[in-house]
Image 1 (spheres, rainbow, N blue to C red):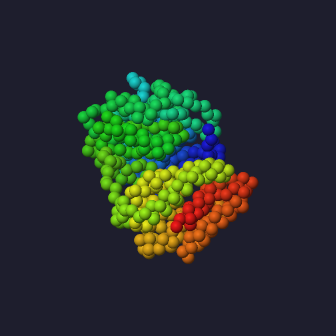
Image 2: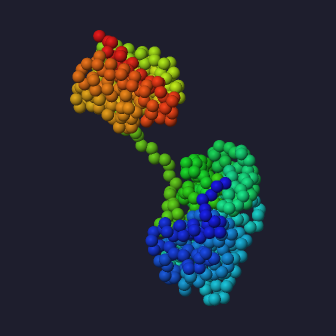
Image 3: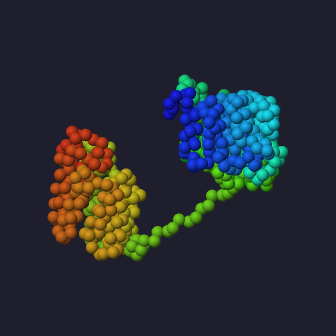
Length: 546
């Protein structure tokens, strides 16, 4: 696995400095004990309230420093990657932010964190500080274990403790709320791969079609391997196990946590699956989906639930300064509003009307384009992917099949209808470009009844959006000179200009648009652009009609 870093020995301190430099000026600071002791603190802290301190190994970003700020943590203590901070580091943090009301340490249930934070707390008490500690053990992955791990549900405790501390509550009250919250949290994670630590050799223990249920946030093995299934089935397995641990009569807050490497698109799919599961009937508030308690680049996610009461709900909804904490969203149904209906007066005014000359012209043009299918494919096979003829013929056949429904006695409305047909039936960039051409021409016809000028306006919009111009080896090389000649009303001259324009593409050795732009000069030489040939064929038909 590849990583962006300089030296393994400095990755954590560099990352924390990066956080500080990209956070609003004056909001966070670090103690001058870097790099041995890594403590991030609030700069607005005046020690008048209970201090909330948490931390642990790095690699879980944005936890823990990302949650330092008003409404959440007062200070975060960081160790190296997946390694608990030292006793001295924790004690330094306690001394730095603890005032008369004391401090609460919030610790995940890992031996190193419990021991180091615990010894620091005892030393702080010896120095006269009023310090308490809450241990969070929310992971339900391993049934019957005496010491469940602390995982992402710990963030619920950060938020609830921070809320009560900010209200001015005393330490006993803050501890009571935090301890009660910790008892009412359950979490479960799963991943499709283990995480990779920068600077260490990586070997994924999971097979290509395997996932792991209940693995830890330091990459430790899960409780079981599971087959790679559709996300709905994976989520069903997790929610069924979580449901056993929740009270079906109570309301819960749900945290959907990205363990590091799941793309936002997939996290939204996961969220949809969770909120479509039977478990969602108990969900009132949603936090996430997002990276909250990660495991470096683990390709997995976790779900955490906390039982709600009015006080906890108020605490979780309260706004906070740290941007890493997403606002809680109340569970709601999807809102659907009707899309606007088509309002084109041109299409509706002349729908289904006939005009013999227009019908004959359109029929002849479309039949010519269908007849050119193999030749255009042959030319495109030399410079592209060989499907221009089929694409053009498909559009022509679609128009032929609907010719009886077109408003043929209204040229502007006919152009609008053709533009709509080509946008849905022709496919590829050429279909969209021609749809733009006819749609813009229709708009111009509504403003001035001049077909030649309207077609030129369509060309202007097509080249604006498409980016091609004369000399770029596209259909524009035939269409532009033909429409310029058509302004004088001479159809024969327009057909001659289109043919000359198409022929000129044979000697253009550099295409500036389409797939031909990837082809070398040697392959382009002597090959006429298929789009330009199609345009020349259209004008040849128009000039031949009486």
